[in-house]
Structure formats: structure tokens, C-alpha cells
Length: 309
Image (cartoon, rainbow, N blue to C red; front, side, top):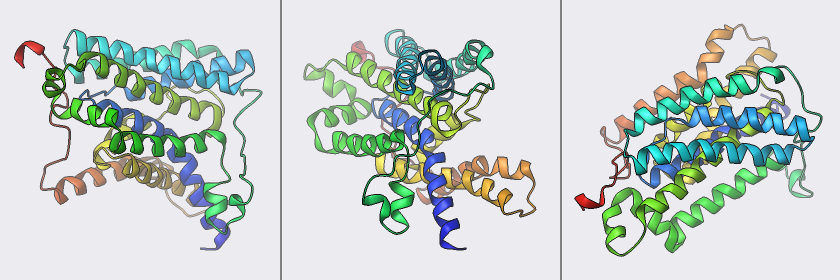
């Protein structure tokens, strides 16, 4: 494999992994707060559709990103109300939102199918850094949203492990009663983190429709939201592992495309299945390695009831 091809595959891995990374970071934050959100794919779709519509209408991809963030947050607010206030089953609520998001995005984006926005997120090489052999073209010759994803991973890791607020976030998923006992508003904090998680899922969708493949197509996430949910388990709820996992999954996706370009006779159906086959294999390996036990937050998926404290 020559250097040019290697750089091309690695750079494509980052581009393909970025929407998964945004969604995975959002799900990681949500689950650290003790709430399971299986509606990520629907939130990504709504973010992709509304972000694309706003970008086309107002000729501003950044405005599209803002609208996608708001749309994802609004979807997550519904999930938060159902699971935190009403204490509904989190799996059922998430699945309902995934289906709702798929239908809503198809309805909203029907008139925009196949259109291309006037402005998209173009590659922005960073001076000096982009000239570093191999690493430069791969990491520092990307678009602005990829650079934003780097910053968000760094911020999430610092917040989670180095701040008092991050300690509270981890406690939300481990022992919310302990936080409640010292006067911390468990319900309010969970609302905040669920909404942030939904906003990041919407951002992942916006990346698909405004940067990765600047257009709108029905169900264009192609299950990436579900991969993001699985990736959080693979990452053991750690932002740095989520970063590596997203690029790994993105690499599998990009590899399929490059195999086609190289003319290697592999069925298109096999290539399309690769990321999902890989997801299943990774989850199996993680479970085997950890003896069937995961480092999931102890209160994940369990509605908090102050009366049961």
C-alpha cells in the first residue's frame, strides 16, 4: 500500500467517523448521567434534515448546525420528560423516538431530497500542522466540524475527570441518591445532560447532510446512531476510547469504498454490511474479555425516585 493511498484511507476514516463520534459523545454523556437513550438515530436524522433545510433556506451551513443542535436537543427534551419526570421505560421511550425521528425527518425533508446546499463545510488545512508527513494530511486537513470534534473530546475528557461538575456527572449514573442527599438537584442535572446528548446527536446528523455527503436523503444515517450506542459500550464510557472507536468504525466504512475504487471484486452488499458486522464482533469481544461484565454506570437505565432513597 503506497503512502498516498494510506493517507487517503486514514483521512476518510476520520471523516466517516466524525458523525458517529458526535453521536457517541452525546450518548456517553447521557448514559454517564444514568439515562439510556436509544433514540440517537432518530435524533441524528432530525438534525440532518432540519440542519440541511436551514442551510439551504438561509444559505449558511453554520446556521444549519445551530438548527440541528436545537432540533436534537428538543427531541432529547421529550425523552427526558418521559424518562425523568414520568419515569417511563427508557428503552421503550428511546425506540419510540428513533421511529418518530425517522418518520419526521422523511416528512420534513421530502421537498429537499437530492438537493445540494450552496455552501458546505470545505476542507480547511491548518498552516504548518497540515504539512507534517502522514499525520498532517490525515488530522489537520479536515473541515471545521472535524476540528470541533477534536475539541469536544478534549473538553469532555477534561470535564469528566478533572472537574467537580464532572464528578457530579459520574455520580449521577452511579449513585444519584448520594447527590440528592447533599442537596444536588438530580432531576435538573439529568435533564441538562440528556438535552446536551441529544444536541450532539443532532450535530452528528448535521455533519452527514452538510459536510460528509452534502445533500439530504431519507434515512441517510444508515444506522450510524445505533453504531454510536454500541460504541459507547465498546468505549467503556470513556471519551478517548470513543474517539478511537469512532475512527475505527469510520475506517471500516471507508475501507469498503476504497476496495470498490481499487476494483477488488467484493459484493456491494458485503461492503455495506462490514461496519455492522464489525460492531457485533467488537461487542462480543468486549464482553468476552470482561467476563460478560461491563463498567456501565450502576444506575444506568434506573429511574430515580426520591421516595425510595
